[in-house]
Length: 286
Image 1 (cartoon, rainbow, N blue to C red):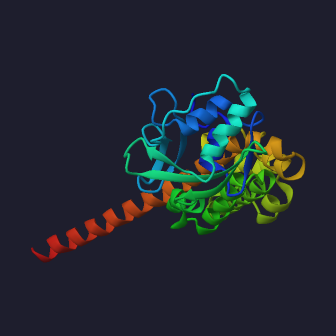
Image 2: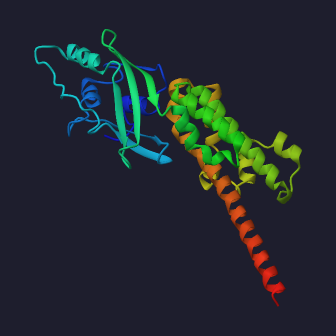
Image 3: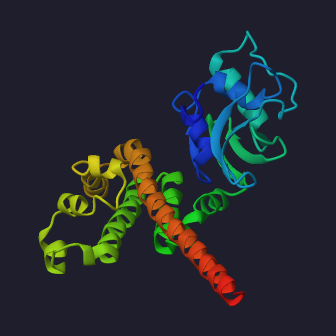
């Protein structure tokens, strides 16, 4: 099973507190068994999430982490009745999921399972999703604090199911990067500020900044910003949820290019200073 390919996997990895999933609509009996029977070799569940201790994305699973007697269906009960019985066993239970890199790195999730309503509600997640979000994006905070803050809001809203709101913050980051790249490099452009800001459409701005933006953004200049605008002004939550991963990764590409360029300048500056000091030392020793 591909990590985070099912509604339940996404819920475990990213679902905010007090979000609910409903039996038969969002998950099935087989998935419930995997959630409870994690100690057996065939029934366990996995999902991809950020591991704060590894400081990187990883795969988590409950294989060998749920030490329960294996639950099996009662042949005399209907599937719905069996599901309700299993939900009652999961209710208020701390579920442990171990990092694939280090089994001592764990995510703990607590679910409220209302067997009568056939739903599960997350009311505990440790380390918190906010901690994971902040740690995962901390590399941008040093150089791009405003972008980092807005990106954290976008990820948090996406995890909470507020997908249109997430698009608002993604578009803010995109627009800020376009403006900043122009301001940082406008001495090399023979264009008036007024033309850039008031006459150029976004596609033209991207073309102008082609040397300073990722190739993917340049190649998709006719698509990317219109997607961001549609997410803010036209799409419903489902449409925004569908397209969020691609747009989010596009923003990450832009930020990564900026950070890489700044870090390169810092390294060159440090080496230049070291070389200057060495040269001065050699000259003084003559």
